[in-house]
Length: 214
Image: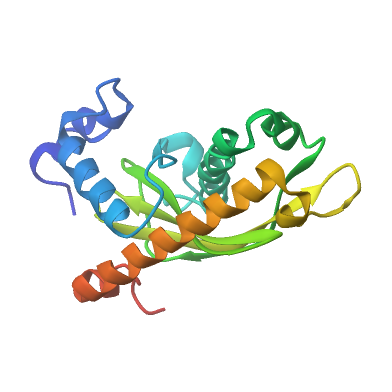
């Protein structure tokens, strides 16, 4: 079915590439960002991606699985960058993988809805659980045009001492590493509380975000 309204104009439909972000996408963006924030996703590290016709789609005309994985790491890298404020002078060692750094250990992605060009996506992370040597998180991808989560990844990240070649317990390393652990625990508490409240207040939207049964 051909699009109607402002999206019927191909240039307007891809206006998320414009420096202004695209006027037709402004209200769609605002709604999705507000929902993700209310659900406990980390607002400071949210990432946006405009779907590229030639690069992101598979031969069937849908955004391909490899694109979702690329977007997953694109946003989670911003989570790693958010550690700089707490790690201070030790952040360079994490970034360069020369001291205590991070390693994505496990992730599983659930593709909930098909996405096609043109569309713009929001990627956001919420931390669900924190242990001394790792944290668990959920990364979700929203479609602005569908106003819904189209893919969701669950997994965990391990802290790893690249000098010693072993998993790093942040509490045992102490100092800024213990501070990072405390910060992640607090983030997780806030995120979980917000998410539980959102699900309780929005049962219909929560079911919509689960996607169709396959």
